[in-house]
Length: 146
Image (cartoon, rainbow, N blue to C red):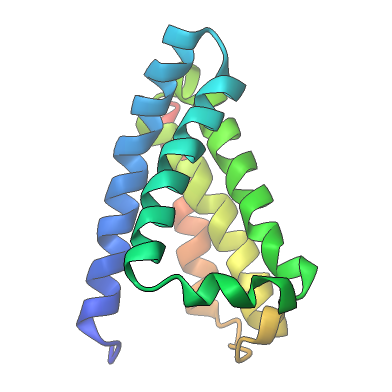
């Protein structure tokens, strides 16, 4: 594995944050009695923090927003769906099963996106090892419910 260590550590920490975020948002959904409202609050807080951070960086990146293709803004829609889905399901599935399903969905989709080189990324081969990794996560999902 010749990948740079810092980006891997950053993504590992991001994964840890998602695992902590899911039950916190689930608790918020129960308190508000609405997974949609909880997702909106979660996104609102995240938006406020990121907007503040962007402004401290000068905010010039936002001036280019009008020139980006509309499909590039769809990430926000996908993120909203993710937060809603997790907020809705975490209470009944538990963190391990919800995270296993999340990772399985990510990996299956990632294999396809890598294969076709989606969204300007360099295409990556689908190897037996990569397929085995996805299958093992799927088995982990099954095991998490036994």
